[in-house]
Structure formats: structure tokens, C-alpha cells
Length: 429
Image (cartoon, rainbow, N blue to C red; front, side):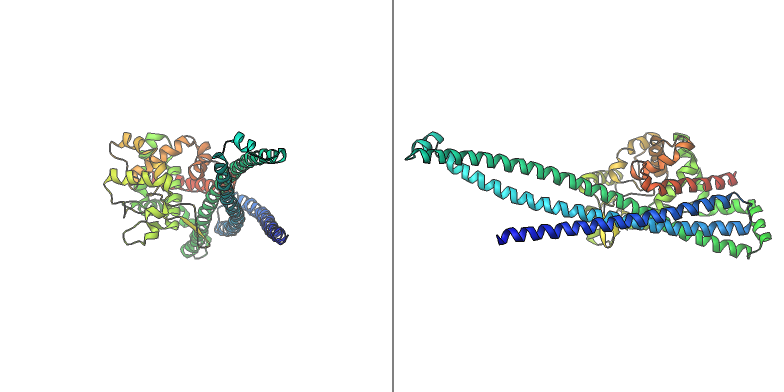
């Protein structure tokens, strides 16, 4: 009786915890809807400002609206991450419950097998005939029947529990993947916010707040072209750094082999490089054991390909840098192991290295800038980037494998960056 009451109390406590998590989830989603409405309002205002005359005040207003919208987008992404954190916790609890249930069922199965083995030593007919009266015979038959039914019931329950556990584990991995994508997007949003604030400061320094100075800055195209050509095009994980002008030439070369617009390719690689920089690097000489490739890469997906890649290139597997996993509240989210400026994970690189080698005539190297550009262009072309209209969807597929609108900031930002780069490329002509 006491055991039944205890089990009932535990079940009630678990139900209350689930209810609390569901309420927290509902509250987060309501806050998210409110913020998304505010973001939409800022986007409408930005559209109106961009349609106005190109004056210093309008440019400042545009930057301020962008900053306000980005601030809200960061909040919205944080809420989505928090929501996923609740879902991941609930899924983990379900995994723990089904794992514990599986252990208990296996113990019951072992006991049934032991009892059956005991009876197997005595044939059923002999066991029945050895009884003293008809009542004992019936009891023996019932006992055998119950053993058989009990064994069947436990086996069925184990099958259902294993099925539920497999679903939970897949759900957990999917949620972790979504959380990793949202953390990536949040880092891009924060970078964009810093960039717009920096742009505003530089603009005011250059113009001293005067309209005439601003118009002079806009009109000085020759000086602007030289600055564009010579500024550093930063690439995380590349074996060498290049200027923007050099990066444009490499992108045009990759474009000539794939048909992917050079400005769009540069925008993708900029965003991926920023992600690599924000994640940091692992597996470098002197890094602690927890940052080694064996710890940061998904074992059954990326470790063997990474061994093959480093062997083919004659690299030291223990000191070849890769990206670290994302972290949220001190916990690892998903896996790291992305390589070079295009941030290919080893298993994905294996699908493109031969295509790159067929064009370059050498072993493909994900840390080499030209190879990284070319591999990205091939992947983007397969995702639909052969036309300007297909670029947004191609960017989304490059990032997450699909076009889930939850991650649309990535695609939106790549397209906006590509448009800015196209203006810069045009200014270099």
C-alpha cells in the first residue's frame, strides 16, 4: 500500500514538473510573438527610410533602426533558444525514464527466462502426469500459460520502450541541431549589431555631422575603390589571409567553374568565417585534451573522415585546427569539427573533395582558400545558387540543410551582404 502511494506521489510530481515546463514554453512563445511584431514594424520603417533621399540624417536614421531591429532579433533568438532548452530538457527526462524502464524490463525478462529454464528441465507432460490430483494438473497448466503470456508481454513492452527511446534520441538530436543553428544566428546578429554601431561612429567621424562632408564622402569613388581593394578580407581557419581585391579574383575564378555569383560566394564565406571565429578553434597545439578532435567531433560521423583528410594532406591530426562546439549555459550543444574558411565538417567535405580535385588537379585542402571557395561554390550551385532568385534558398540549405523559416536571418543576412559586396565589386571595375 505504502509503495503504491509512493509511486503515485512520484507520478504526480513528474506530471507537475511537465506542466510547469509546458507553461514556461507557452510564455516564451507568447513573448516571441510580441517581439516578432515589433521587429516587423521596424522593418517597415526601414523600408520607408531606404526609399528616401540619400542624406546624412536618413543614413543615421537607417543605422539606428537597424540597431533597434537587431537588438530585438537578438532577444527573439534568445527566447527561441530558451524555448528549445525547455524542450531539450523535457526530451532528456523522457530518455532517462525510458532508459530506466528498459533496465527494469530486462531484469524482469531475465527472471522469466530463469523460471522457464527451470521448467524446461521437466517436460510439460511429465510435470502434469506427476501431479496427485486434477486440481494440481490445472495449476501446472495455468502456471505454464502465465509464464508464456508474461514472457510475450515483457518482450512486447521492451519493443515499445526501445521504439520510444529511439524516437526520443532522434528528437533530442534534432532539437540540439536547431539550438546550434540558433546560437550561430545569434552570434551573427551580435556581430551585425557591432558593425552597424561601428559604421555609425566612423560615418560621424568622417563627416563631423555635416551634410556637405557626407556628400563628399559619397562622391569620392576613386578613393573608395582603393580602400575596398586593399582592405583585409578576413577568413577564419585559412592558411593565408588575402585582401578583398584578391578574394574577389578567387571568387570570380570559382564562379567561372560553377556559375555562382562572386558577390554571393563572398557573402557566404564571410558569414561562415564569422561563425568560425565566434565558435573559436579546437585541436591546436597546446590545447587541453577536452578540445582535441576526438572530443569535439561526432564520433560516428566525422572522426574517420577527419583521419583520412589529414592523412591525405600529410597533416598532423593532433594539431590541425577545427572549430569547437557551440556552448549554451556552460553545456555543449551539438558537435564541432568544422574545417577552414568555409567551415565544412569532415563528412560533408568528403562529398566535395573529388569534385574540387578534378578542377584543380591536386588533393583538395579545406584550409586552402581557393579549394574552400570552389567547394562552397559547388555546394551552393547544387543548392540552387545558379540564379540570383535561388540564392536565398541556397544559403539556407548551405547553413541548415533546408529552408526552415526559423533560421531565415542567415539567408536574409547573406543576401544583404551579397548586395553590398556587389556594389563594392562594381566600384572596383
